[in-house]
Image 1 (cartoon, one colour):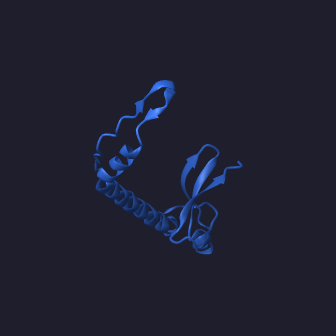
Image 2: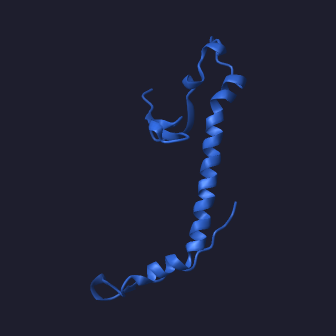
Image 3: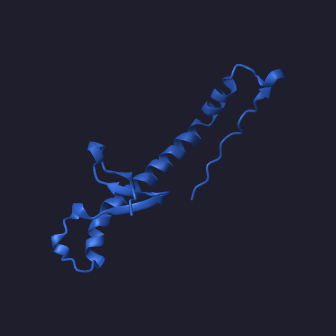
Length: 115
């Protein structure tokens, strides 16, 4: 797992009454100074996400091949009826949905677990 090192964030100078001093340009200079690192980090996150989506795209086929579903004829279950649960958050499941609303390769959408 790579590590990304950014330059130190500039300190905010606080003056009387809690107000900050300076023009605020320091933070923009910091962002410019770290732009190559930000770009590398973004590239890494995009590649990780693309690999994750590619794995989720193949999961229905894999599930139809290796999982046993009691009282089910596997040939009668269409690929699009296989629900791929990616995660859970509170009372919601993160379900992989292919080409959700024409958005491309698919996405994870939260669905309420009403059980």
